Image (cartoon, rainbow, N blue to C red; front, side, top):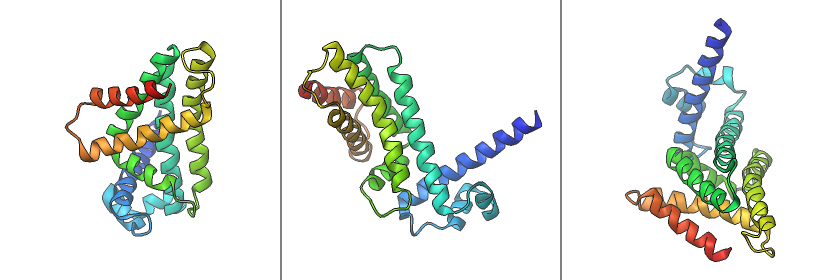
Length: 196
């Protein structure tokens, strides 16, 4: 039981460190963010950061794993047991809700997707593939069932759905935050229907 408490405290601490890091990196960039800044924002000692992560780069790589892992899990839960067309709607809604909840992480992810000179680029590629893989399975089921056109390039369509959802959600939250999520969802679905 004591181990469970210690484990829970460690996870809580890591979550605070993730949140502090993502906020700071979104505000001032990776290079300008120091371990001292992260510790101060998370309200922990600097040693606590190094107890949990080998370095700032390690923390960031784990942050990417954590954040994209949560999104991928949201995708999986959203489509479970649904027919393809309903699953596509559920994917869009799950992505919008995730990005609304983790806006700073989504902005960070969006900016990091296009940088190729980072130490964590390979990790990001693998994580992106996992998230897009859930979408691709859903799109493939739609093609197989006849709900989506047989000539649809599943890989391109899945990457497009992921990318468009990410960009549209960040744009919505930055420039149209008063717009209802249902309205944004319907607009995205209209694009998907038009293409499919």
